[in-house]
Image (tube, rainbow, N blue to C red; front, side, top):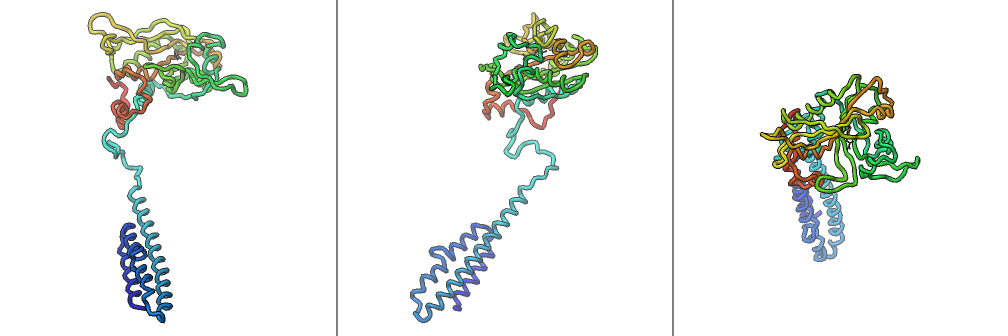
Length: 364
Ligand code: DAH
C-alpha cells in the first residue's frame, strides 16, 4: 500500500485520539471525509493515476475509507459516552446536603405562596392547641355538603351558596363542588369516635367573581367534639387563634349572635380595626370599628345525630373562615384576584421564605 495512504491512516488515528470533545471530533471527520477532506481528495485524484495502477489503488482507497469511517464512528460513540458520564457526574444530587438559603437561580427565586403560608401558620397555631388536620375531596355529595349539616333539600341556604353542580351520578343525585369546608366536619365525625379536634383547610367553590370573591377559594373549618364542651371553650380557642395569627396580643374580638343551620347557638366573630386606615387592632382613642371575620357556633344536635354521635354524651363547637380573607387582612392586600394570576412580580413580592418556619405569632 502506498505511503500516502498509510500516512493518512496514522494521522487520522492520532487526530481522533487527540479530539477531546465532539467539536474537535467533527473537525477531524470533516477534514477527512468532508467535501474537501483528505480522503475525498485522494479519491478525486484517482482519475489521474496511470491506468495499470488505478484498480489496485482504487481498491486500497475504498478499504481505507471503510476503515476510517469505522474509526471515526467509534470515536464519536466513545466521546458521547464520556460526555454523558460527565454530565451525570456533575448533575448528581446529594439529597443529604442541607438546603442552601437561596435557590440556584438567585435570591428570591422560590417562595411559599401566601395561601400556603397562611395554611402553614394556621396549622402551627391550631397544632399547638392539639388539633390535627383533616381533609376531604373537592367533589362532594349534596348530602355531605348540605343535608348532613342540617341544610335540608329546599332550604334557602342552598341558594345562598351559588353552588356548582356536576352531572347526576348513578343514584340520580348531582354531586357538587363543595361550597364550604364544613362537609369535612361530617366526614370526620362519621369516620372516627370522639373526642375530635380537627382543622380542615382546603379549596372551596362558588359561582361568584369580583375583587373579593373568586369561584375557587379556600376555607378552614374547625371542629371540636368532646364531653362538657361549652361556648367558653369556643371563645377561648378563637380569641387565642386570632391574636396569634394576626400577631396582636390585645386584638379586640367580638362575638355576635347569628344564624347557621349547622350550629345552635351560632355566632359571627368580629375583630377590631380602623375603618379609615385598614389597620387591625385596638382603636387608639374612641370606639373600635368591627370587621366580620368568621362564623362559629355549638354543633347542632341534629348534625351530631346525622353523623352518628350521641348529643347527650358529646358536645362541640365549630367554626369556619376564608383563608384568602384573613391573608389579605393580615398583609394589607387589597385585591383577591392576583392570588391566582401567577404574576411573578406579585408572587415575588408576597412569597414567604421557604426556610423560615411558620411562627406561632407572626405579626404584620
Ligand atoms: N360553612 C360556613 C360558610 O361557608 C362557615 C361556617 C360557619 C363554618 C359556622 C362553621 C360554623 O363550622 O360553625 O360560610
